Length: 401
Image (cartoon, rainbow, N blue to C red):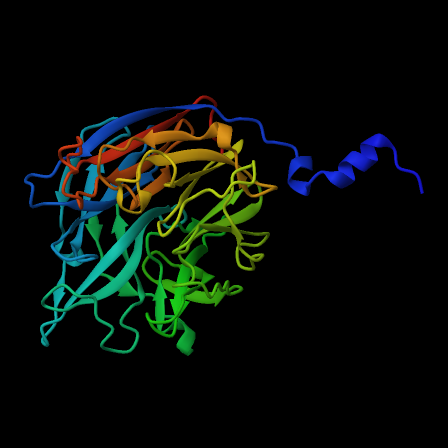
């Protein structure tokens, strides 16, 4: 058997090096402050935005959901929202409608919602906010005191009336594997036919490692209904896989997955059945260094991007290395982060930035939204203000999704 030199080289090179590198998609970043806390005792958190298209074809308006982090870890107020008439207009709010507020229970438990991500549902002309139901003790502790205490919930906003519905529970199949079932801090998708793909992390209870699946749902303008779910991704490492985020790019579907030790990525052709997750790495083979923190996506029609935090950025003083927020292009064939495209789109000012959102706004821009977590004693001294920040990603070429 004879090999030509080029054939021998192809055998010796790893498959990742043979895949053509995507063209670099250029953009600039404009960082804005949307909100500052009214006092040192207030901490706004989990800001996530969605664009509402203009019926007249002009600039979209913006709705951003946000809530207060209270005195105990993972203890949150009811949900508020802010509005902006255009991507550059003045912000109004935060406003907390009674429909989105706490629900006090007769036994002293507070029923609330956390980790919300809003999104536009074009076929119905409604905005859907999806998050997870939480039961709090009087001390602010998360409870698992009743069956299916932790479930996925949603509320609907009608831009014509500017009114919200009350929170409703997404009814899931009766099996034990859905007794704990959250869509939390997760990007979800609307398909061309109007159905939703909603990523969930699921388990029998909060003490077991979590698994991830994607649920297909119908939305009739009022009610979100489960139809089926896809393959279940499992990783029996510490707490398993959680806080999955989903995006579609050039006909395929990509999940990014949180794990206590490292981030993972999985790919699918139909949005329901995914290949085994792979750890996130740079294109030089070095581990990305993102761990125990969510990652999110942005897609341009010419490129796929991951937003993340990581070790190794002179940030050992930040809890779990959760700042700055980096954005880098992903090679969709090798599932690797292209190191030379990495930019810090939200700088580190001494506060953690791990709980954030990312969303499409228009053909000309996308957003990354985050509030500075003032959880370290020296955050303020290092320059952080507890501000809610919007990193406007301004594309050099139109993004035609």
